[in-house]
Amino acid sequence: MNNVAMIKANKKGKKDVINRCIFVPIGALFVAVGLEIFLVPNHIIDGGITGISIMLSVLLGLPLGIFLILLNLPFFLLGYKQIGKTFSLTTLYGIGLMSLFTSLLVPVKPLTNDLLLATVFGGILVGVGVGLVIRNGGSTDGTEILSILVNKATPFSVGEIVMFINVFILSAAGFVFGWDRAMYSLMAYFIATKTIDITIEGLDQSKSVWIISDKHREIGDALNDRLGRGVTYLNGEGAYSGDEKQVIFTVITRLEEAKLKSIVNGIDPNAFLAIGNIHDVKGGQFKKRNIH
Image (cartoon, rainbow, N blue to C red):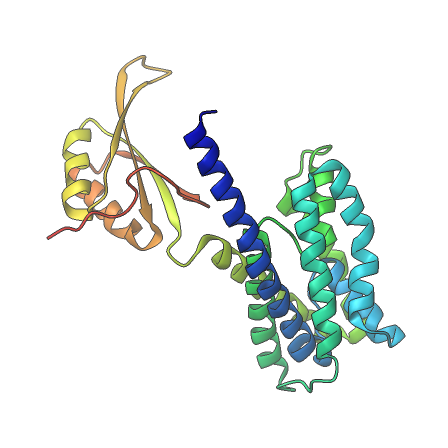
Protein backbone atom coordinates (compact mmCIF):
# COMPACT_ATOMS: atom_id res chain seq x y z
CA MET A 1 0.00 0.00 0.00
CA ASN A 2 1.45 3.38 -1.01
CA ASN A 3 1.50 6.47 1.19
CA VAL A 4 -1.55 8.08 -0.44
CA ALA A 5 -3.62 4.94 0.07
CA MET A 6 -2.47 4.69 3.68
CA ILE A 7 -3.43 8.32 4.36
CA LYS A 8 -6.88 7.75 2.83
CA ALA A 9 -7.33 4.57 4.86
CA ASN A 10 -6.33 6.37 8.07
CA LYS A 11 -8.74 9.24 7.35
CA LYS A 12 -11.56 6.78 6.69
CA GLY A 13 -10.74 4.91 9.89
CA LYS A 14 -10.86 8.13 11.94
CA LYS A 15 -14.10 9.17 10.26
CA ASP A 16 -15.68 5.79 11.11
CA VAL A 17 -14.64 6.13 14.75
CA ILE A 18 -16.06 9.68 14.95
CA ASN A 19 -19.32 8.51 13.35
CA ARG A 20 -19.60 5.70 15.89
CA CYS A 21 -18.97 8.07 18.80
CA ILE A 22 -21.70 10.41 17.55
CA PHE A 23 -24.40 8.23 16.00
CA VAL A 24 -24.33 5.14 18.23
CA PRO A 25 -25.30 7.22 21.31
CA ILE A 26 -28.01 8.96 19.29
CA GLY A 27 -29.31 5.59 18.14
CA ALA A 28 -29.23 4.19 21.68
CA LEU A 29 -31.16 7.22 22.94
CA PHE A 30 -33.82 6.78 20.25
CA VAL A 31 -34.26 3.12 21.22
CA ALA A 32 -34.47 4.00 24.92
CA VAL A 33 -37.12 6.68 24.31
CA GLY A 34 -39.13 4.31 22.12
CA LEU A 35 -39.04 1.65 24.82
CA GLU A 36 -39.47 3.62 28.05
CA ILE A 37 -41.77 6.41 26.83
CA PHE A 38 -44.00 4.40 24.48
CA LEU A 39 -43.75 0.61 24.47
CA VAL A 40 -42.88 -0.60 27.99
CA PRO A 41 -45.50 1.47 29.90
CA ASN A 42 -48.17 0.05 27.59
CA HIS A 43 -46.91 -3.55 27.92
CA ILE A 44 -45.89 -3.71 24.26
CA ILE A 45 -42.62 -5.47 23.55
CA ASP A 46 -39.99 -5.43 20.84
CA GLY A 47 -38.40 -8.56 19.44
CA GLY A 48 -35.19 -10.32 20.48
CA ILE A 49 -33.40 -9.99 23.81
CA THR A 50 -35.04 -6.58 24.24
CA GLY A 51 -38.48 -8.22 24.23
CA ILE A 52 -37.40 -10.81 26.80
CA SER A 53 -35.90 -8.03 28.92
CA ILE A 54 -39.16 -6.06 28.84
CA MET A 55 -41.17 -9.07 30.00
CA LEU A 56 -38.74 -9.88 32.82
CA SER A 57 -38.62 -6.22 33.86
CA VAL A 58 -42.40 -6.05 34.19
CA LEU A 59 -42.76 -9.46 35.86
CA LEU A 60 -39.94 -8.95 38.40
CA GLY A 61 -40.32 -5.23 38.89
CA LEU A 62 -36.66 -4.48 38.15
CA PRO A 63 -35.24 -1.80 35.81
CA LEU A 64 -35.18 -2.72 32.13
CA GLY A 65 -31.53 -1.63 31.77
CA ILE A 66 -30.34 -4.40 34.11
CA PHE A 67 -31.78 -7.13 31.91
CA LEU A 68 -30.58 -5.49 28.70
CA ILE A 69 -26.99 -5.75 29.97
CA LEU A 70 -27.20 -9.16 31.68
CA LEU A 71 -29.01 -10.99 28.86
CA ASN A 72 -26.94 -9.48 26.06
CA LEU A 73 -23.55 -9.99 27.75
CA PRO A 74 -23.16 -13.72 26.83
CA PHE A 75 -23.89 -12.94 23.19
CA PHE A 76 -21.38 -10.10 23.25
CA LEU A 77 -18.70 -12.51 24.47
CA LEU A 78 -19.60 -14.97 21.70
CA GLY A 79 -19.49 -12.23 19.11
CA TYR A 80 -16.15 -10.94 20.34
CA LYS A 81 -14.55 -14.35 19.77
CA GLN A 82 -16.35 -15.39 16.61
CA ILE A 83 -17.34 -12.27 14.64
CA GLY A 84 -14.85 -9.51 15.29
CA LYS A 85 -13.49 -7.00 17.75
CA THR A 86 -14.84 -3.82 16.13
CA PHE A 87 -18.39 -5.15 15.73
CA SER A 88 -18.49 -6.52 19.28
CA LEU A 89 -17.09 -3.39 20.93
CA THR A 90 -19.49 -1.17 18.98
CA THR A 91 -22.33 -3.49 20.03
CA LEU A 92 -21.29 -3.33 23.69
CA TYR A 93 -21.04 0.46 23.42
CA GLY A 94 -24.56 0.67 21.96
CA ILE A 95 -26.15 -1.78 24.42
CA GLY A 96 -24.42 -0.13 27.39
CA LEU A 97 -25.69 3.32 26.40
CA MET A 98 -29.15 1.95 25.67
CA SER A 99 -29.28 0.40 29.16
CA LEU A 100 -28.11 3.65 30.73
CA PHE A 101 -30.64 5.76 28.86
CA THR A 102 -33.55 3.43 29.69
CA SER A 103 -32.61 3.64 33.39
CA LEU A 104 -32.52 7.45 33.24
CA LEU A 105 -35.91 7.57 31.52
CA VAL A 106 -37.74 5.40 34.07
CA PRO A 107 -39.14 8.41 36.02
CA VAL A 108 -40.45 10.05 32.83
CA LYS A 109 -44.18 9.61 32.27
CA PRO A 110 -45.34 7.99 29.00
CA LEU A 111 -46.50 10.44 26.37
CA THR A 112 -49.62 8.44 25.51
CA ASN A 113 -51.76 5.59 26.78
CA ASP A 114 -53.28 5.05 23.36
CA LEU A 115 -52.05 1.62 22.30
CA LEU A 116 -52.02 2.36 18.58
CA LEU A 117 -50.08 5.61 18.99
CA ALA A 118 -47.63 3.95 21.37
CA THR A 119 -47.14 1.08 18.93
CA VAL A 120 -46.52 3.30 15.91
CA PHE A 121 -44.27 5.91 17.50
CA GLY A 122 -42.45 3.41 19.71
CA GLY A 123 -41.79 1.17 16.71
CA ILE A 124 -40.52 4.09 14.62
CA LEU A 125 -38.17 5.37 17.33
CA VAL A 126 -36.78 1.90 18.04
CA GLY A 127 -36.32 1.28 14.31
CA VAL A 128 -34.46 4.55 13.72
CA GLY A 129 -32.25 3.95 16.75
CA VAL A 130 -31.36 0.37 15.86
CA GLY A 131 -30.79 1.40 12.24
CA LEU A 132 -28.30 4.09 13.29
CA VAL A 133 -26.35 1.63 15.41
CA ILE A 134 -26.29 -1.04 12.67
CA ARG A 135 -25.32 1.55 10.06
CA ASN A 136 -22.28 2.39 12.17
CA GLY A 137 -21.09 -1.18 12.59
CA GLY A 138 -22.80 -2.46 15.71
CA SER A 139 -25.96 -4.05 17.05
CA THR A 140 -28.37 -3.51 19.92
CA ASP A 141 -29.59 -7.06 20.41
CA GLY A 142 -27.84 -10.37 21.11
CA THR A 143 -30.20 -12.38 18.93
CA GLU A 144 -28.60 -10.81 15.86
CA ILE A 145 -25.18 -12.06 17.01
CA LEU A 146 -26.66 -15.49 17.75
CA SER A 147 -28.29 -15.57 14.30
CA ILE A 148 -24.98 -14.74 12.58
CA LEU A 149 -23.29 -17.61 14.41
CA VAL A 150 -26.13 -20.08 13.74
CA ASN A 151 -26.16 -19.03 10.09
CA LYS A 152 -22.61 -20.34 9.69
CA ALA A 153 -23.70 -23.86 10.69
CA THR A 154 -27.16 -24.03 9.08
CA PRO A 155 -28.72 -23.40 5.65
CA PHE A 156 -30.98 -20.67 7.07
CA SER A 157 -30.33 -16.98 6.46
CA VAL A 158 -29.72 -14.53 9.31
CA GLY A 159 -33.11 -12.93 8.64
CA GLU A 160 -34.91 -16.28 8.81
CA ILE A 161 -33.22 -17.18 12.11
CA VAL A 162 -34.07 -13.79 13.64
CA MET A 163 -37.70 -14.17 12.55
CA PHE A 164 -37.86 -17.74 13.94
CA ILE A 165 -36.59 -16.57 17.34
CA ASN A 166 -38.93 -13.59 17.43
CA VAL A 167 -42.01 -15.71 16.70
CA PHE A 168 -41.48 -17.44 20.05
CA ILE A 169 -40.67 -14.21 21.89
CA LEU A 170 -43.67 -12.31 20.53
CA SER A 171 -45.90 -15.33 21.22
CA ALA A 172 -44.70 -15.34 24.82
CA ALA A 173 -45.99 -11.78 25.14
CA GLY A 174 -49.49 -13.18 24.64
CA PHE A 175 -49.18 -15.34 27.76
CA VAL A 176 -47.55 -12.55 29.82
CA PHE A 177 -49.51 -9.44 28.76
CA GLY A 178 -52.52 -10.81 26.86
CA TRP A 179 -53.04 -11.55 23.19
CA ASP A 180 -54.11 -8.03 22.30
CA ARG A 181 -50.71 -6.79 23.54
CA ALA A 182 -49.01 -9.57 21.58
CA MET A 183 -50.68 -8.34 18.40
CA TYR A 184 -49.67 -4.75 19.12
CA SER A 185 -46.14 -6.04 19.79
CA LEU A 186 -46.13 -7.72 16.39
CA MET A 187 -47.17 -4.43 14.81
CA ALA A 188 -44.42 -2.56 16.67
CA TYR A 189 -41.86 -5.15 15.57
CA PHE A 190 -42.98 -4.89 11.93
CA ILE A 191 -42.85 -1.06 12.03
CA ALA A 192 -39.42 -1.14 13.67
CA THR A 193 -38.10 -3.62 11.08
CA LYS A 194 -39.24 -1.48 8.16
CA THR A 195 -37.87 1.66 9.80
CA ILE A 196 -34.51 -0.06 10.32
CA ASP A 197 -34.35 -0.79 6.57
CA ILE A 198 -35.16 2.81 5.70
CA THR A 199 -32.60 4.14 8.19
CA ILE A 200 -29.84 1.88 6.88
CA GLU A 201 -30.59 2.20 3.18
CA GLY A 202 -32.13 5.68 3.08
CA LEU A 203 -35.42 6.82 1.57
CA ASP A 204 -33.70 7.17 -1.79
CA GLN A 205 -32.76 3.49 -1.90
CA SER A 206 -30.45 2.49 -4.75
CA LYS A 207 -31.20 -0.33 -7.16
CA SER A 208 -28.99 -2.23 -9.58
CA VAL A 209 -30.41 -2.82 -13.06
CA TRP A 210 -29.39 -5.47 -15.61
CA ILE A 211 -30.89 -5.34 -19.09
CA ILE A 212 -30.32 -7.76 -21.98
CA SER A 213 -31.64 -6.61 -25.35
CA ASP A 214 -30.72 -6.59 -29.02
CA LYS A 215 -31.45 -2.86 -28.88
CA HIS A 216 -28.92 -2.27 -26.10
CA ARG A 217 -27.42 0.89 -27.65
CA GLU A 218 -30.79 2.51 -28.13
CA ILE A 219 -31.86 1.66 -24.55
CA GLY A 220 -28.50 2.81 -23.13
CA ASP A 221 -28.72 6.15 -24.92
CA ALA A 222 -32.32 6.63 -23.75
CA LEU A 223 -31.41 5.94 -20.13
CA ASN A 224 -28.55 8.40 -20.39
CA ASP A 225 -30.58 11.13 -22.08
CA ARG A 226 -34.00 10.74 -20.46
CA LEU A 227 -33.07 9.43 -17.01
CA GLY A 228 -29.70 11.11 -16.62
CA ARG A 229 -27.98 7.86 -15.60
CA GLY A 230 -24.74 6.53 -16.97
CA VAL A 231 -24.71 2.95 -18.22
CA THR A 232 -22.05 0.27 -18.67
CA TYR A 233 -22.09 -2.27 -21.49
CA LEU A 234 -20.91 -5.77 -20.60
CA ASN A 235 -20.18 -8.67 -22.92
CA GLY A 236 -22.21 -11.80 -22.24
CA GLU A 237 -22.93 -15.18 -23.80
CA GLY A 238 -26.15 -17.19 -23.70
CA ALA A 239 -25.46 -20.53 -22.02
CA TYR A 240 -28.06 -22.37 -24.06
CA SER A 241 -27.76 -20.66 -27.45
CA GLY A 242 -24.10 -19.71 -27.30
CA ASP A 243 -25.02 -16.35 -28.83
CA GLU A 244 -23.13 -13.23 -27.78
CA LYS A 245 -25.20 -10.81 -25.74
CA GLN A 246 -24.74 -7.21 -24.71
CA VAL A 247 -25.72 -6.55 -21.10
CA ILE A 248 -26.58 -3.05 -19.88
CA PHE A 249 -25.78 -2.31 -16.24
CA THR A 250 -26.81 0.83 -14.38
CA VAL A 251 -27.73 2.04 -10.90
CA ILE A 252 -30.89 4.02 -10.20
CA THR A 253 -32.92 5.15 -7.21
CA ARG A 254 -36.17 3.56 -6.10
CA LEU A 255 -38.14 6.54 -7.40
CA GLU A 256 -36.70 6.12 -10.91
CA GLU A 257 -37.69 2.46 -11.29
CA ALA A 258 -41.09 3.06 -12.93
CA LYS A 259 -39.65 5.50 -15.46
CA LEU A 260 -36.82 3.10 -16.35
CA LYS A 261 -39.29 0.27 -16.96
CA SER A 262 -41.34 2.57 -19.18
CA ILE A 263 -38.25 3.54 -21.22
CA VAL A 264 -37.11 -0.06 -21.70
CA ASN A 265 -40.60 -1.34 -22.53
CA GLY A 266 -41.11 1.45 -25.06
CA ILE A 267 -37.96 0.49 -26.97
CA ASP A 268 -37.95 -3.30 -26.57
CA PRO A 269 -40.95 -4.98 -24.88
CA ASN A 270 -39.10 -8.33 -25.03
CA ALA A 271 -35.98 -7.10 -23.22
CA PHE A 272 -34.80 -9.09 -20.20
CA LEU A 273 -34.87 -6.81 -17.15
CA ALA A 274 -33.60 -7.61 -13.65
CA ILE A 275 -33.73 -5.11 -10.78
CA GLY A 276 -32.25 -5.65 -7.33
CA ASN A 277 -31.80 -3.65 -4.12
CA ILE A 278 -28.37 -2.24 -3.23
CA HIS A 279 -27.51 -1.37 0.37
CA ASP A 280 -24.64 0.98 -0.44
CA VAL A 281 -23.14 2.75 -3.45
CA LYS A 282 -19.70 4.33 -3.41
CA GLY A 283 -17.25 5.61 -5.98
CA GLY A 284 -17.75 5.88 -9.72
CA GLN A 285 -20.16 8.36 -11.28
CA PHE A 286 -23.37 7.39 -9.51
CA LYS A 287 -24.42 10.99 -8.97
CA LYS A 288 -27.20 11.81 -11.38
CA ARG A 289 -26.32 14.00 -14.36
CA ASN A 290 -28.57 17.00 -14.91
CA ILE A 291 -30.94 16.55 -17.82
CA HIS A 292 -32.76 19.25 -19.70
